[in-house]
Length: 204
Length: 204
DNA sequence: GCCAAAAACTAATAAGCGTTAGTTTTGTGG
DNA sequence: CCACAAAACTAACGCTTATTAGTTTTTGGC
Image (cartoon, rainbow over all chains, first blue to last red; front, top):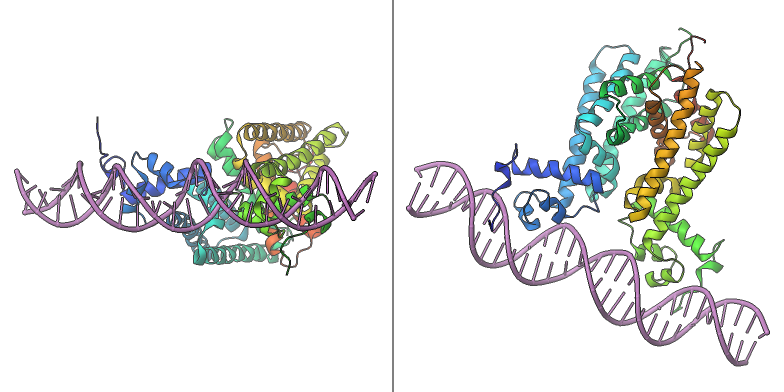
């Protein structure tokens, strides 16, 4: 009969802070940020709630870290992509596949970032929305250029961006049901669907 | 200086219950179900929180009504559509346009239904998910039939359904930004994007 | 094996939540 | 104009929440 728990960092891999962040992402995703309590989070790693505060500053800080960690990876990727000399269509395909892959690779964090950003505390919410707007504008520019070069059909670029960014969130639903569909098949079919909808099949 | 508020139903249109339901949908959408308190909901119609309980049973009941009201309209529509003798492509286009239109017409309720269904109380959550599964299966059947008749490209039908159902939720973002894009333009461009991605352009 | 530091614990607090009880005011039909 | 139902009010309850304070245990380097 133990009366006291041993340190959490010796169990799993990574620092205590990383373990807590990872568990938090999982719980925030499955129950929602507001419905998940610090007691539940603590229980998931077999400690008491106040012990969490030896490692983290607050519950809100966990959400901030998740949202901006995801946003940073998105920004880093599109900034690298902008520098490449690639046909517009390939840039768009690259973006679609990147979004699908990151939704699989960082399932919990991307889900939380997509669903719980409204709960970000005060200065962070505005900053998050600002970053989002910048990202969308970069995508709009890529689409606009591809239209000018007649690589894809004329379409309102912002609508194409909305459609793509929303569509890839279908991966969230796939994560829960799968139905025998592999990640590769999902990525290929969804990419084809979204890309073919843009391509100018009548030639130049 | 008034000490007592007059009845709410004499101000706006509709019964008190309808006014509360409408305000609740708006608040649940903009702040999230859990972050919106009964005191805020009451304040939005200039009464005190306990007065709400003369008209409604509970906060959860408001959410249940919103979610199932939306789900019912979806089910009614697809059941009518199934009875029609139409080419598969036209059924799919009908579905896409219906989804976009209802997201505009019943903005708050559809948003809440999409984002807050996890907060449904116990027997309703399972029922909601069950209805969702049935609806998705009906869409899968429509896509599958269209593939068999070579109206659209061979694609994993479930992935096409995921892509479409997620993509139309981009309308949520459009609601917040618009950027000078009319509802009609939004509907047409998004529908074309999603439909062209499926169409078998090489003929039968 | 000791000793600081890290990290667990227990106890408690203040705030906020949905909701109930009991009372008073308001509005309406006879 | 009065009585009765509808609907507002005030007060409060019981519960949960994130977080703090203070204490004890564990751990790792010497």
